[in-house]
Length: 384
Length: 185
Figure 1 (tube, rainbow over the protein chains, first blue to last red):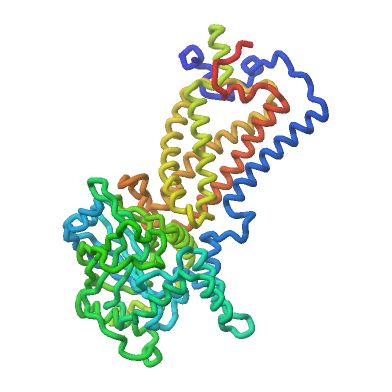
Figure 2 (cartoon, rainbow over the protein chains, first blue to last red; figure 1 turned 90 degrees about the vertical axis):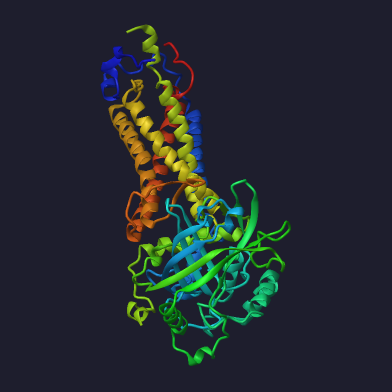
């Protein structure tokens, strides 16, 4: 090899190789190409380069405008809700909260995740309503969301985004997207076309069944006494390597109360105002309950509840004792991506999980570059 | 200078060739994974899980590669290359080395600015290299995309130039990077 010191003069540069003495001598010139051969070879090179470039762009969705991508999903949310700079494209209206999670150690038999070892972990969260309009009027039937970030001391994180529905209405992103398209307002009536909604209902039995389950459970009076569900199943792996499929829920310590009156009699922000008042009175608490799946329980379809009677394990208590406006809080700058998981929790085969991760990322990336606009719940309102 | 050394100098040395082909495969994989994952619903997560550690592996390898490059004797350009073509070849080498360093660093930095955990595998994760600032994330995220397309264009130009030399000029340019011992001339 020419690594020895004898070749110091030629080392390390093409520059010193420029003199003809040092260039690679082409002693035998190959026979000249015929015009046809030259054309054939040039065309071959062109086809090969174009083919590689086309494959690259194809994977990027350039030639498949009908294919659902995270970007196109978020485009549809924007078409329905308008663009509200700086806000999440869904669950746009919210308040930031913080507190801690006290693990009781029971979770360690299911997962080796550090968050389940006995002890306290700081938590940042965000309560939200399921709409892309950051100034939407609060309504009891609007989906309530709770995003959480558990920060373990060594920098590992667990993020989760939960809602108060017992099951998710859509089994995958395509169904969700098709439902958004079906609910677009008709240009003439400015209302969704009921025929499109009915057609979606008829063609999506998963959706119809899930809506039946959702409607059988009346929403509680507020955020503080709502149960929040992971919806998707996850794979928990303990220190021995045993894997269990798990769905989890946050069950409120605050007593459940039925809603006090119709939305119309309430203030525009009544759900958030009640949450703020409640958290100022006393810390709000939820038990983190893991539900253990049995073989055969659906892990890839969040529209289907698991059978009654599955073993449930209370692994600790979440306490939220501080609330802040989305305008000033940290949670606004966090993407509650449900696939930011600690070692010991892994995704199931539910196709919604990867879809949520990709779509949340797209929403986060878009809003991150936008000038933040004031939200509906102002810093002053949170002080009340 | 021995005759043996003269012929050996017609090729890049073994470590350089190994690093070239290894990183060529890794970078092409990265570029295709990168563009595919951003447009993917179902495979987004699995592709991203590969993208992060592979990017960091490229960052580590390019440090080794630059050290190897700076301590190696390079084979000369073929006589068929004009001075202008040599300038272009040198510039494209600088561009490719630059991208190999900058693109993984931008990826690491943008995840840092967004406070995404930079998970490599299991509980192994990297420390953030920038403070939490989503506006900085946004700029770096766009930079990452632009650099990816630039990288792909640079690859196409490099690939095209080598094909041209191999199939049209037929000056043995590619043989300098191929395995085996150098041919005696």
